[in-house]
Every structure is written in structure tokens, then in C-alpha cells.
Image 1: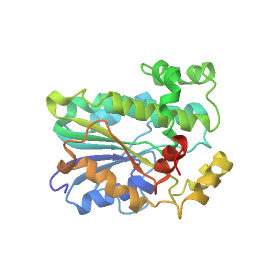
Image 2: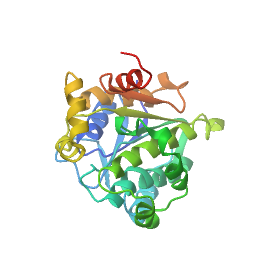
Image 3: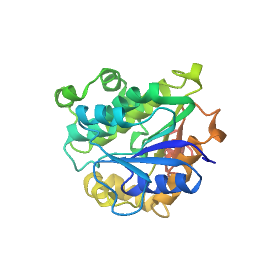
Image 4: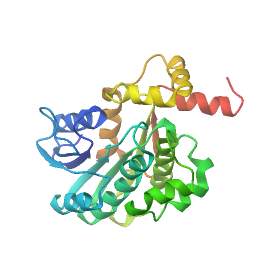
Length: 259
């Protein structure tokens, strides 16, 4: 599916990022992995260390990456146990900054896939703060979080809500070059940071876990990302694809009074 394609995967050292990098390679891609820490073993054939919460590091990363990138999988992210400003920086503003910098290096027909979350399901209800964040730069994130009361676990929800909105907003931004952007929204996934989500999100996360038959795994999510990176998804634009064991469907049915 990805034979001969050059794919960049952020967050490639663990979890969904590592699974995506590995699967993309199995499918024939040339993968460049990016993370703040180097993979323990294996992983992408090429690796660049970078901090997506730091403007200088992002600029250095963008400069090191080659032209002709066929796919960008924005998977790097922090859990809600981290300070709110850090979460917003890495999960939203750093992601947007890197993507914008790389557009000129993307091949025509390239695919951008953003890892969102079931936590962003209610994005339409956060219009004011999402619109206020559109031109936000990394240096301004802390003041923004204070101004909009974004702290604790709300930082994670906000970042994912804004990321989904940004994905949908860019449905046709680069269509003259056939570059498309989509998102994947997992529910709870059994990765090294699952315990952080359960500890921080408390009753809501526990209720989700009781409703689901099991948490997802990186192996459940990576094939969805790789499909969106492939030519088979060329006519999917500005979509947010749930990969959550049915949780988003469950929430929609409940919200509209269905069983």
C-alpha cells in the first residue's frame, strides 16, 4: 500500500507512532521517525530527534527533512498528566507549526494524517477558544491557557478538539497540489500512557472502559493511519475517522436519544 513512499512519523519511539512506523515499513515505505527520545530498538530506518514543544527544535527538524515527502503522520503527543501549556504546545501548536513548515517539502498528492482522539468528540462546542487559537504561536501558549482557563485534563481535550477542527478546516487548503489532510480519533488505547489517562480523566475514562469490550491497541490504530497515508484514500479529505471500538457512535446515539 505504501511501496516506495517517503513517510515521516512523529512520536515514532513508542505506542501508536512506533506501530505506524513499523507497519509503514512492512508496506514498503521509507520511514523517517521523529521523537523526543530515540527508539529503544528497531523502529524507523532513519530517525531524527526533536522536541515538538520547542520552536527552534521544530525549525531544525523541518530543515533536516528532505523534499518529496509522500506522507506525514502527526502522532507525537503528551498525556493530560503533563502541564497544560506543554500539552497544548506539543499536541496542537507544535504539530501545526511543523506541518505548515513542511508543506513546501511535501510531494504533490501527499497525505497528512493527524492523530486526534475521542477526547475531541465535542469540538463543535469549543468554537470560541478554537478560533482564538488559530494564529497561536508556541511562545504565547501559556498566556492563552490562562486566558481561557485551560488547565489539568482540559488541556488534552482542548488540544484534540482544536486539532479536529483544524483538520476539517484544511479539507481543501492544498487541493491544487492534491495534498489532503485527515485525522484519526482513537478511544482509550493500551499504550505506556494509558495509566496517565485513567488517573487524570477519572470517572469519565472508567465509564468508557466499562462500555467498551476492551481498550484499543496500537495495532488497531496503525492500519487506519497507514490506509489514510496510501493512494487508496486519495478521495478522503478533511475527515475525522473514529477508531474507538464504537464509542463515538455510542455517544452520538445517546446524544440524539437513540439506544
